[in-house]
Length: 187
Image 1 (cartoon, one colour):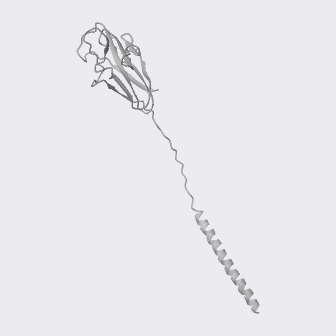
Image 2 (spheres, one colour):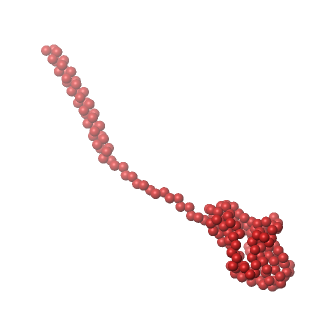
Image 3 (cartoon, one colour):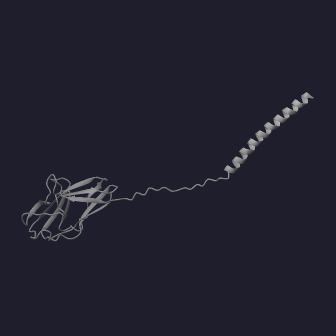
């Protein structure tokens, strides 16, 4: 009989171990059951980079000038430089303030009021006063010229400006104004 007791004890110990293992499995199952009830919420958000094209520009005139002024000493003049312009200082400087390369077109918005004006010339070099861009009294409002085909972002271009005339009507400063229009677009 002593042996029977030992066998019973071993069976009892085995049952305790099985019960412990079963309890652990049951705890794990219950734990996973509760955690699997929690459902994650997912949202997708579109990301877009909108960079508008900006073709803005600014200009500076030679010296303290606020407009392009020619002040010849008489009614007849040939290749008269814009006032305040020198061989080292251009008459007009256009800067690209936008975020892309720009093209600049130029024309006169209205007819020249001063009679006798023969031409208005622009050049990117200080000594080349008749070959680059050229308006005459016959095409000042119809000749829309591209004076810069591409000015890079943050860059600028310089122009020297001249005019010629014969028998130009005498006038007070600012009396005979015409509008020189610059327009930018994408290069």
